[in-house]
Image (tube, rainbow, N blue to C red):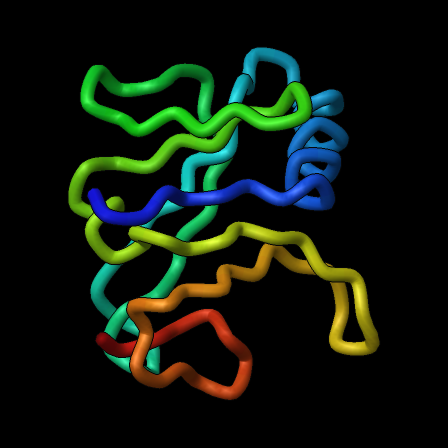
Length: 109
């Protein structure tokens, strides 16, 4: 991989907060799936364990897991958490995306 995937302080804080209310869940899984209005979409799920081949990103006491296929799409990306007028959500700043939809949840490469 030429670039690492970064978890921001805000994202780590939000993951810790969410997991504190979900007994048995230990991490946020971030995946890229086919679909969405731009070709690919981000998927976020709370999980109880990592798969053997997951990339584990630990920052500020929080863990994010990324499967091998999604790693290629997220290489060099930053996973952040935003709280603005549009609402609260995890936001991925992805240098591999050539375009994205207006809501920022789907993209193309």
